[in-house]
Structures are given as C-alpha cells and as structure tokens.
View 1 (cartoon, rainbow, N blue to C red):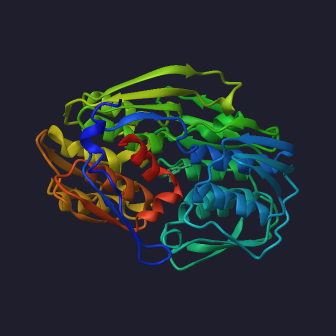
View 2: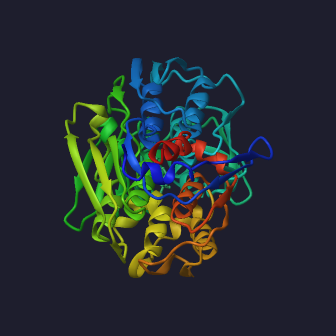
View 3: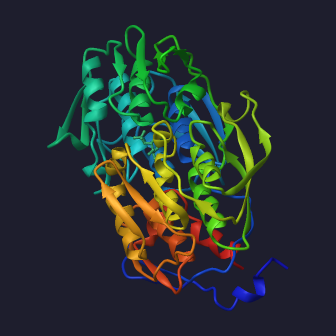
Length: 457
Ligand code: S3P
C-alpha cells in the first residue's frame, strides 16, 4: 500500500463546478502525501511547437511521437492546417507531410493561435520568410501581449506586417520583396524572439546572426542543427541562412519539465511524499528549476538519463525522483531567470515554506506572459497569507518552514501556470481552497488534476 493511503483516501475528493464553458471552479483539499509514478507527463510544448513547424517547412514526411494534446501545441497544428499542410494523427503520433520552404499556401485569411505566444511568434518568422499574406489572431490574453519584439527585427529584414495599436495581434502579413539577413542583438532573453528571427533567416538573402547575452532555451538551435559561435565574453551568436538543410523530423517528444516542476515543488513540500516522473526533458537551458530547488535543499534525483544527440531531436531526457524535504531560501541568479522563467510561479510557492528570504529580481519578462505573472504571483501568495513584497522586476518572499497557507479562493487569471501553482499552494493549506478558471490548465497540462488524483489515491 502507498504510504499514507488510508489516512487520506476519505479526505481527498475534488469537486468541480462548471459555471460556463470556460470558467471552472476547482476545489482542492489539503493533501497528506503525494506518492506514485507519472509515466504520461504532457509532452514538452516548446519542443512540440518546433517539431511541427520545422516539419511543415521540410520536404517529405515527418513522424512525431508523443505529440501533446494540450491546447497550445494543438493551436500550432491548426495553424499549419490553415497553411495547407496535411497532418495525419493516430493517437499521440502525428505525421506531417512537409511542403518544403516554398510550399505553404494559406487556405484561410486568418490563422488562430489561441493562447499560444510561441505559435504566434515563431510562425511570424516563417510567414515573413516565406512571403505569405495572412493574419495571425489569438485569444484576449495573446492579443494583449507585446509583438513589437518580433515585428521590429522582421521589419528590419524587409517584412511587411500590420498590427493593432501598441503592436498587438492580430498581425497581418503582406507580400514583400524578399528578406535580407541581419545581425540582431536580442534586447531581452527570449527564445521566442530568437527563434522567430532565426526562422526568418532560413529564407533571407545572406547569413542572419542572432546575438544572445543570457542563454534562453535552445530547442530551435538543436533541432535545426544551427551553427553557434561561443564568444569569450559569454555571448552566443547563432546563425541561420538558406543553406541550412531542413530535413524531415523523426522524434518522440520528451515530457515537459515545466509540467514536472509542479510535482517537484509539491513533492518537496507535502510531507511523506515520493514522486517519480518518467522521461522528462532535461535540456540544460530548461532545467534550472532542478538546480534552484536543489540549492533550496530539495531531495531531487535523476535516473535513466538518455543523452544521445541522434535521438529525440537532440534533447536529453531522464526520470526525476522527488522526495519531501525541508527547504531554505534562495536567490535566483541572472542567468537562471530565462532558464526557469515558466517555473517561477511555482518556485514562489516553495519560497513561502523555505527558511529565510528568497529573492527573484531581474525578471520583468514575467509581466509579459499569459498574464502579468509578477502581480499574479504576489496576489496568490498574499491570499495564502505569505509575506511577499512586489518589485517592478520581481518579488521577495519571507519564508518559514512552519508556514501553512490559508484556505483561499485563487484567481487563475486564465493563466495555466498560475492555476497549477495555486493548486500546489492549496495542497499544503489548512483547509479546502478553490481556483477560479482552473480549466485553463488544458493550455499545457490537460491531465494535471487527474495526476493529482492519482498521486493522492
Ligand atoms: C517559449 C519561450 C519562453 C516561455 C514560453 C515558451 C518557447 O518565452 O516563457 O512559455 O517555446 O520558445 P520567451 O522566449 O518569450 O521568454
């Protein structure tokens, strides 16, 4: 029998009330322990978007296994279908009939990117490069996010694009006279901007160079096999051009470390827990969450590492094992911010129960995510009764190992990561809490609440 099973089975039930199609209130009861093995974490969505997009502009059939059924990667597939790409799906395996660099043909005037910033920003590079006349739209959250960061370099290359006030979506791309390569120093650490420019560079005259000061996730570079110069000052220059060969992609997408992060924190905080997560992507530009938690004293171990560049699009994977442990405060280092950007909301929950003052600064990019994640994190921690101070570029938490979150009604702000971080906070609370708009977990992790039920059953 799993440890703690008999103690908690009578207490654990989740009641859902759906007030409208997309406004679910989820009640989360405190948990006594989390135990079990998760073999089906959602597939990494950053890698999934890229595999699908790159397969579409390669010539020939690509087979992508373990493609995620989460809303964001599905938005990428819908957009590709709207560009005339044939996609065959069998369970979680998809076959993309790639049309080559010159083969995309919009079959609709508008392509809906849903909630997915990665879809919109990466596709902007491909549409500009391949000279398509089509508009990209998104939901309310995506339509309020900054797009100047991709439109500026694309226009510098010769792209034509109309947007709404303040450079927001919809983005309408127009025909132009062809793109010219540029050298572009990233004004912020952003894998989406980096990838957008590199993708446009695949179609431009000359060699495009993107200069990166702080490394962000490098899935694009790995999957396309791009050439990189590593400078003595720590900057990286990534190059793309028409001579980069686009080959069909055959890979299985690893489990999403950003989804795994919720269990790394929950398993650390909830006493008597042991969680094993199978086949998680541990790309070094994505795994700072593990080193940050280890620095906090978390008991996290990896096993069964597979690190063969020829497999899985060059992405290493491993099993991750988490056991509960006492935590101490941490200060995030500048280089860790882009590497752990999506995991900061759940790390903030860990900081509440860690001894001492934890600091997250230099993280103003969090304000440009699906919602303003600095303000959403501060609201979540305040509702739980934690001692948190907000800064323009981050926050500070005075933690305490004896801290027990107050029962609360959390607002997801329709942001999947805020909903799941709130759920982790609620697992540690003294009584039941609820999360408004919890159905948004489907953006990256549709089975999140099923996995919670499994780990507590
Ligand atoms: C992503 C990059 C990150 C991240 C997002 C996915 C990607 O955004 O927050 O969830 O797949 O390239 P930025 O590159 O804008 O920081």
